[in-house]
Amino acid sequence: MEDLLIKNARSIDGNKKDILVRNGHIEEIASFIQAEENMHLIELEEDCYISAGWIDCHTHCFEKFKIYSDNCEEIGYHQGITTVIDAGTAGADNIEEFFNSIKNCKTHVYSLLNISKTGIYAQDELSNMDNIDHEAFIKMCQKYPRFIIGVKARMSQSVVKDSGDKPLFEALKIADQVQLPLMVHIGGDPSKIETVLENVRPKDVVTHIFNPKTNGIITKDGKIKPCVFEAQQRGVFFDLGHGSDSFSFDVLDIANAHGIKVYSISSDIYHRNRQNGPVYSLSVTMSKLLDRGYSLEDVIEAVTSHPAEMFHLSSRGRMEKGYCGDFTIFKIIEEPKEVVDSKGKKVMLRRYIQPVAVILRNQYIQL
Ligand SMILES: [Zn+2]
Image 1: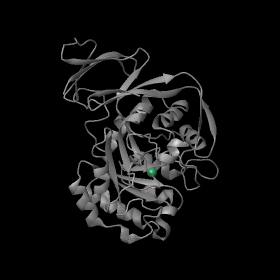
Image 2: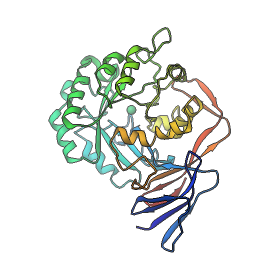
Image 3: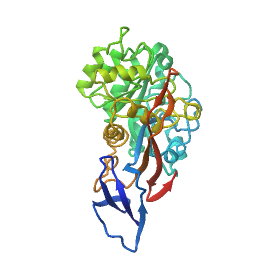
Image 4: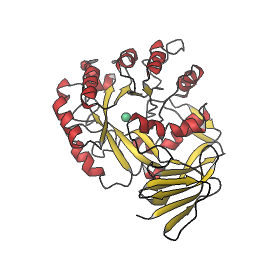
């Protein structure tokens, strides 16, 4: 593997350094590193920023299941994301097929295994409690310990139907058994948001946190529900999970006013909301938060070090010696851009984030 020397590497704090990548890992970061003959030189443009490779921790890329799926490269490195985490599209019955479908991809792909052994073959995978098979779940976690990095449960009415809260408690038991973080999706009741937030463990992840539904984080009179503050206090991680129905600027604004912030920014992207909106890409999602009170540092941490911490990807997410040599190179375009949220609300951003290249698996790829 060739050494890479990245020159003119401007991090988000504005500092320009040289970065040497050896054997796929960051070997050295310094103000000046002498180029040597055997090094592949990458000279970044003046107006570019570089960060650790972006991680999208809520995507759907098991292409067999058409409801929510996409191609991992389309939502991955083509859009500047070097690591995608599939959030529960596959379950124990089909995780092997999913693994085989992505194993030659350039983009790094991980799975949060759905507690329904069926995965999301249909919208209501948790309406039948027989779909929850602890033994099969554990077996697959043992077989794919580096691929399965978490547990996924979709706790909303359209998914659980008459199963009510029962799948949530099964998910918590499973997550304890396999000692992995749990990501719970919230939506229509059941489960009530209070039930989810009061029962998940510290460091578990609740996704779709800024959804505009009545069972979301906001009370009827426009206040934050007390359970939200309590969960944040207990160390529960809030994830954005934009998706087709789950991001509202109005909810974001109220949350901002009360100090409720997401720890990770994810897209919940799949082919339809990528092609037709409102998601389009992780970078558009990031730009929405950048425009509304999140600093550039907040936004970049929310797609690098934070998701790496949440899902124990210990070699990823930081631009420091010893960490993985995947990077995203991007620009801040100081031009207005119209975007839309899940309710169809249009907002004119003052500026936006545009990925321009990635360094992935020791290769520089211009987008
Ligand atoms: Zn999803």
